[in-house]
Length: 316
Ligand SMILES: O=C(CO)[C@H](O)[C@H](O)COP(=O)(O)O
Image (cartoon, rainbow, N blue to C red; front, side):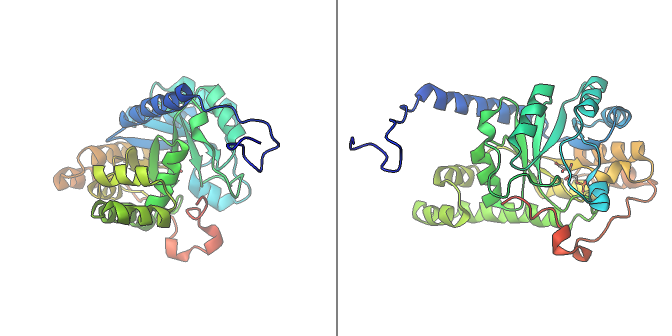
């Protein structure tokens, strides 16, 4: 046995690492993360059919998320939630010119392969669907299409980025219409980045171990003072004020799912939320766009949810 052989292998020599493959990983990640930068300052809206997708596009959404049921309905109906029917996704792709995202289950790399073959612009490996794997997330570097993933804290965000996620969204508690968890996750990530930014290398090594992340990625994040990919807010955003609050807390944009098409007057609310994200620092505009929208979705408070009903705990 050579001195470099792995004692646990069957003796077959491991192929040497191909440096060009490593650098193409990096190039492709840079491209995918750059693509996500183009969504900055925008609103991504959940839509369940082509008609809603057209409303979202006309309202100024920067992208749509194609799915069969918005999170509030997934929550209400229960059962196993899976990738949507390709027919629905194709109808939505045909209906709009803005990017179309679609969700696969956590760890379900075959659903991701199918979504990539359908030509979606982004895949969301989402805790809103029932996880397919209790241990592993998808190795997103293996795909050409960019992925967005949810995170509740800096550790989760950096682990997903290491796996190849080109965009992060705070998880919030989807389908509730209650913005508290989104706010908590945004604040947690911000606080943890600030903490890392004040650390020496020795301290960062220990913090990286504590968070379960790569020292180099943590150091890069600390130096930048932000994630190295865009971070959108998601989960429970139901009003223009919710959306503007997430932006003022430092997010690059927002996802709105249940809040638009389960509220009254979806067209007006969709436009109002887009305006609120654009003018998030202008209370006069926020007052104007918040006026006369009709009732927001009824929703549920996060506090009233049983542990088993919480979606944000899925993924690790
Ligand atoms: O899963 C999503 C992002 O990938 C949803 O778009 C978002 O989280 C929806 O949450 P809500 O219905 O509470 O707006």
